[in-house]
Length: 407
Image 1 (tube, rainbow, N blue to C red):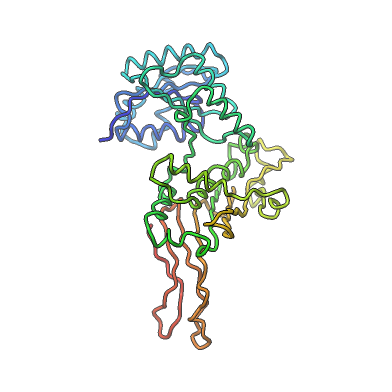
Image 2: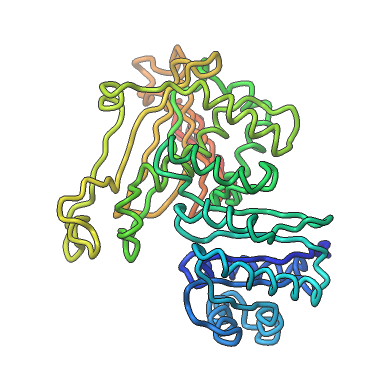
């Protein structure tokens, strides 16, 4: 049984889409596993005028697909409390402080506090500043953790300002910038495949790899997220976070140890060698587009909430280059978009073909050798496959691609 982590979780934006679709079901899984059980409490906040009972009903509904155990769900939601709150009003934080202190004593939480901001990024700095100003951060032996999700600003300057705002209230080791893609099983498996197998790591360089492709395809359009999406687009919504996290895992050197600090250090080192394009180079190496109308489906500019003259991209594809010893000359191709044929995420590592094809003599009738391809399936299917060349079972000598799979 896992050790329970005593925690008070304060959730800003508790009635929002992220909380109801992702956070509450995830918390229930922690509850089922015993990571949180008797000694935890959740304070949900938003502008809504909820009471505890209505909040618990909402949480129960959001987790109903995850469990049919009604008693377990009832026990789980009994730890949830609600405070109507305006994050811009400093006086409202005193109410939160009183509630936090009350629940800390009730559930014996030892001052451990997690502040999860499930709101637009323009509120991140405001919440952090007000939490510190009203002394909601634990000052004893308990821990303080601030959790935020993408987007981290709109550009370099706004991201830098956001970091400054957060750092004014929290220490760096207390700030958790979350990319949920890193929790996917096969993304975590990239490190195991690379560094746990000499047959791959010894060949993981520009001498043997022709190119690497990362694809995140979505079948749906913007749906109900037009307001957010039109201010972000595919580059900010998918490339600068999810795709670049995958690319950095593929491109980085082996870390000294399998520790968060060492892994981050190698990711940063790899990204520092990423070639920065000028405007002309960006235009020749990247394409952007919007989905068009097909059948009964609307084009992007016809979606509710999207300006008729919007230039926000719903599709982007491009070529990245690393100027370092391992990857010089090997392109990393990335692509992502909405309203594509299928929903899937995968990585294709395409190895170079043999310099000489000894099987391509005229009498053989053999087809040209295919490139070896290591494919990592991230979603919806999970696993990986390796495409190799082998002799087929027919009379004569003909080669054909054969797939070795772990699914």
